[in-house]
Image (tube, rainbow, N blue to C red; front, side, top):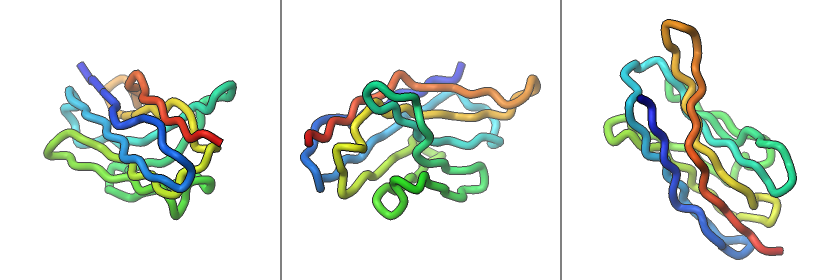
Length: 119
């Protein structure tokens, strides 16, 4: 059973930094990618960053140059270092794992961690 648990959210003032962590377990294949999504207040969930199966990183334009995704497969952990935060970065941040299974790719989600940047 795949399990994802986010941590590290909180309140930080504009220009500050936060480091989110996603602890994951239950993925028994190496054929998976992981990423971060966020849902700003009153808006739809949006993609933030991905760490692909081969380790390649990709970022939404809105966070490029400020956020860094990293993964430690041995520990079963993924991180999102967020620098120079702005109020537009506020929202609930979710960890995602897309796992290739015999039935096709399956998405798994954590329950989220809240990031608040006051204006």
